[in-house]
Length: 187
Ligand code: URA
Image (cartoon, rainbow, N blue to C red; front, side, top):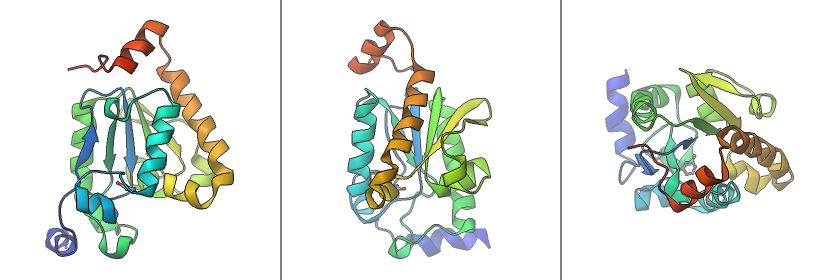
């Protein structure tokens, strides 16, 4: 069944959206899957939700180019629907390899889809803000920025999750400034 999924989704998308950012990043974000703008540009999180994510990254004192951004599925699902389990499973080995290669210090998952497929959990409202472990990497689940655009009253909760991530990455002022200058990436 899985082998038919690639041709199926590739009928609807214009290109694969694999990932973006610094392959030596200490901070990695995982979203759901490309939308229309991402499918057009081949870059994750460039639409409205992406602009909010970019602001969230800046609020954390990172440049977008210093972090790494990926998604559960690499092809835009038809009409932006939530990825089906088979599609997520088909793409998961690619994401796992991205995580292995980047080896981030912390992963932030955005919304219900990565919570489900990367961490095997449901209930983002309950699970957000609580650290998880993925093969030794600390993972912080938080809300998806597209949800925050619809429910701005939840932004405070997301910010408290991101502050936990900043505290965990912490480091000395020197480390922080190196990170700002974009020279902190492990090769
Ligand atoms: N939403 C996602 O989950 N990923 C993207 O790349 C864009 C929007």
